[in-house]
Length: 165
Image: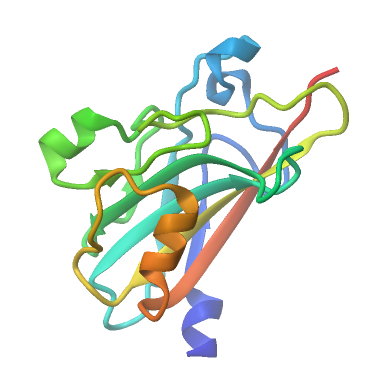
């Protein structure tokens, strides 16, 4: 299992690991276009039946941080999401994948929009899951984390930064 976790990786052509996320990915209320970044991954362990993605800001001034994107029940055959894929109700309609509810109270990608100050960390964590789907509609980040418990084969993470003055 440790070997699988080391070979399972996620990256983005939109931003470099631990680099600043571009304005195209920033939430509209903070002057951005709110487009989800391109993501691609490889090395999912054997037995992966689906993927789940959580984008979380642990630096947010709220207990538990801030969930910016909750997306799950993506098929194991998927290896990327294009820029602007912003999982929404439309994604469910066309793909069968499920969009969870962000801390914004929305069922689509919500980009960075921290209060002025130091840059925040945006962890894009992809989970390789051992079941084809997890039950529940519009799960919040914490609800999805509970639903995945006992089903995570591996996880991969890439982190972007964004701050406002």
